[in-house]
Amino acid sequence: MPRLSELSASSVRRPNILFVMTDQQRFDTIAALGQTRVQTPNLDRLVARGVAVDQAYSTCPVCVPARYGLMTGYEPSRTGWFSNWQEVPKVREACGEYLPEVLARSGYRTFGLGKFHTEPRLEPLGFEVHERSEELWPTEAEFLADDYVRWLRSRAPAFNHLEQVHGERSDMYYGSQCRAQPAELCGESWLAGRAVEEIGRSDSRPYFGFVSFVQPHPPFAPPVPYNRMYNPDEMPSPIAGDPVIDAADDYLAWMNHAVWAEDISPAQARQLRARYYGSITFVDACIGRILDAVEARPDSNNTLICFFSDHGDMLGDHRAWQKESFFEASCRIPFLVSWPARWPGSRRLEGLSTLTDLFGLATSAAGVPQLRDGHDLLGVIDGSKPSRAKVCGFFGSPGTSKFKAMLRAGEWKYLWLANGGRELLFNLAANPREDVCLALAEPERVASMRADLAAILGARETTRAALTGSDLRSFPFAPFPRRRIRQFARGISDFGQPSVGA
Image (cartoon, rainbow, N blue to C red):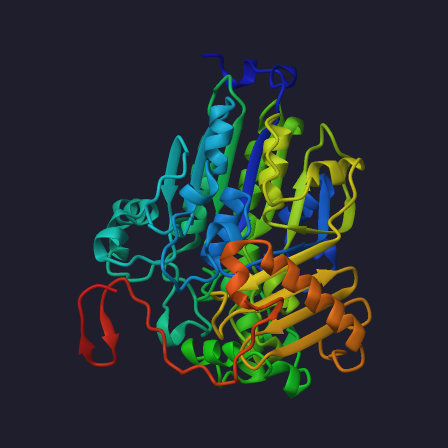
């Protein structure tokens, strides 16, 4: 086996492919793209190295569906995943090979590290090296088997008492925190270290690497000194729109209650945003270590790097927290791609894109193109193909009151909420804050976009239940029953009541 230093850039005919993913990172959190309140020097390096896809969306903005869309190249209408809370579909049977399997079969060395949030939790995805640092563990046995947890407990037994190694959850889910461990012992540091090791391995094959961070997903618990990097008084207050608009989707109020967020004040929201930005800057520093490892290789220019998130976080905008919404803060994502051997840097791509496009981008770059439900993003960036004309998103089981959908076309965004049959229409060019609904002022456009959405839903059997005849199915409005979510690997299921397991 030749040494890494003996490999020339010309010896790698197909590019290395590196996916770097964060969890719950908003689109407006990269300094080089205009968010000057947050420091992201290494994401700024990626912007300078390649192409920023400005209008990128998570078409089902919640963890499990977004990740299966990424791994399969298919939308929820094929994977069967419409939320985190549902019966587990048989994804492989419906979708075929996962992305690492396709690339491995075509001659790539593959490694997957970090958060995967598959169901079943330990589902094989086809990586040669597959190590996990998950966010949640249904049982204590799974917690103790987590690769990062094992590393932490062997490296620093003083932290063996921790139930939650990424910060305290439950009623502190949206509370300003500081990580118990120092930065060098956090999961993000472990993940960056393992990525550096895998990138640096000598191998005649090109590599496909998937590196997935848990942060900045709540709880917002950056380690010292990132916990105090940002002054809450310098943070913006949340966007509070028309109460009718903000209350149209009762699921958001249900989620606020579920995670103890319905009473967060503007001052507390600014504190939380400061910790959120601290988490992003900490992850950015870890990404810098990974970029350094890529650049240390002689084939760095022939490495396709894709950075993205699974979805955003409302952070109090529109009186909402968490995700599972089709407001921009939730469903629009940061999306950077770079391949210096092929594309010049510091470019902006304004066309629409989605997470499912990454499957086709990777396989096309590898010479085994499979677009599946995706669009030819490689062709779009090369300039040989037009951008997507539309993006459609779904959340919630079709045929139930929890179902909602989005259609984005040009500067217009249409939202459908089955609970009450409510409709929202925004012109994002004129109103990026989404606080002016034009549904009543634009009845013809609403009717046209509603018909387009119904046609998309009718095209696959899994989504036809969302229709009544050829029209969208609605239900009489009813508030969703409120309940709290308490998430522990071990400990208690309710205050003062002992339990076993999660």
